[in-house]
Amino acid sequence: MVQSCPEASPAKWHLAHTTWFFESFVLREFLPGYRVFNADFQWLFNSYYESFSAIPEKRLRSSFARPALDQVLAYREQVDTAMERLLEQEPEPEALRRTELGANHEEQHQELLLTDILNAFFTNPLRPAYLESRDRFVKKAGEQESIAIPGAPKVQFQRFEGGLREAGHTGGGFCFDNELPRHRVWLEPYAIADRLVTCGEYAEFMADGGYRKPELWLSAGWDAVKSNGWRAPLYWTEENGRWSVFTLHGEQPLEQLEATPVSQVSYYEADAYAHWAGRRLPTEFEWEAAAEGQPIEGNLLDSRYLSPVPALDSAQSKNGTKYGDCWVWTSSAYLGYPGFRPLDGSLGEYNGKFMSGQMVLRGGSCVTPDRHIRSSYRNFFSPETRWQFSGIRLAS
Ligand SMILES: [Fe+2]
Image (tube, rainbow, N blue to C red; front, side, top):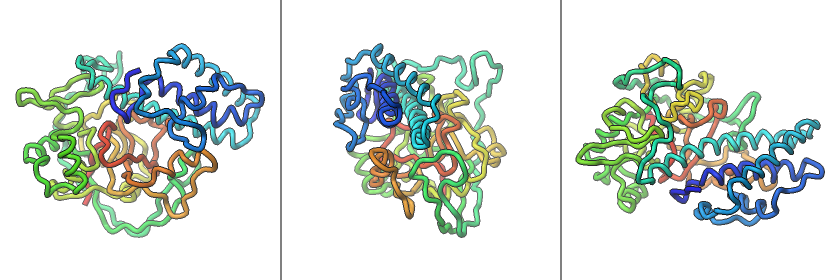
């Protein structure tokens, strides 16, 4: 039931809401004779679909002491069973499209579950670890693989010629409406870093007074620094001059994370860091052109590290490790592509209505399911957002 910040949701709510999605958009319309589990759940677990029903206030989700967990689990069981029944009887194509959307929606919430638990455990005075492990780089229980903590390889900038390119989803398989239509973009020649900015590098920016120099910051970013009292990434804390970083593996001394990608920074911090480093953030199209055609490999959810890990060597990243560890803030505003058309009906609210005041992030994180991500995938958050696994990849 814990909701530790207004952006996060309780785990129980995630369970109920992903269930609600299938009931509301698939079963009610496509399974003849389906009876809703509870009439109140139809609006209680609506997140933001204004044209569908009333919506309870988001920041009060932790007050849902009722329905109790057993009711939510019973709701889920009814919906699971009904979905199985629907899929057994050759449903029409629209029902299948929405089922696929519901599965992708649920994958997004699986990621949010972990980001929200990390925030909840950070705000818990006991600072509990979500995942106990002797060595955070041990891949899986029982597996022998253990990776020593290496120094970060020197960052290399991979050059691209630019020119006329295409961006947006192509080929088969699922995509969200915001990845379409595929369209042409013009790219000037550019270079993009072969790995993410590390905690050690970010600590240098801090030590150099990064958070005290307004000339490095966007105006709105500097306002955010002052009004929030920012002086480090979200989960960094200082005690007696020593920094530590809170992760799903508990508190880690910064010295152990020097080569590990920095995470939980806002767009404003990413931009200020790039300014300090004499570089800039990539546009979403530069990132996509660099990633397209590369294998989807990297530290994503299926590795089960549940935390960013150091790049092993630059050879690995040269092979196209453009995915995982942290979502990359791009300098692109989240807008519809030329000819963008949201889905019909209430589902049109899924992505399209957020196309103002947000920035695009690319590439997935250590808590993104592997099969969920692709080169055309667009994540988006407002620029002051810090509770996500969001990091920095430099460009020039
Ligand atoms: Fe949702």
